[in-house]
Length: 81
Image 1 (tube, helix red, strand yellow):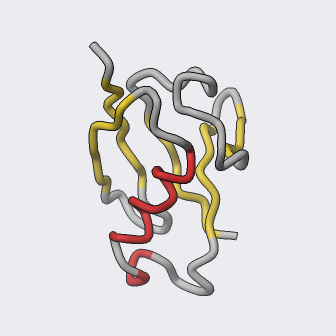
Image 2 (spheres, helix red, strand yellow):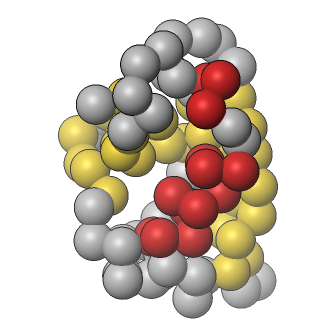
Image 3 (tube, helix red, strand yellow):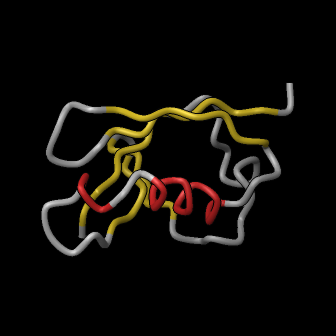
């Protein structure tokens, strides 16, 4: 009951990664997880942000918890910037 299941859609492909996080994990933990996937998922710089396309929201406040961001079993797009 204290976990959140998140699917990450990779940029430039149909590939996806998934993982469970605790509700009290921070947004920076999501970014750290993406870094463990390696730079080969990116075409250019490797710089990215996590977004929900509709309604559009970028998750940039790294110190907020997933619960504070109201992330519940979400699908997030890894958007290369």
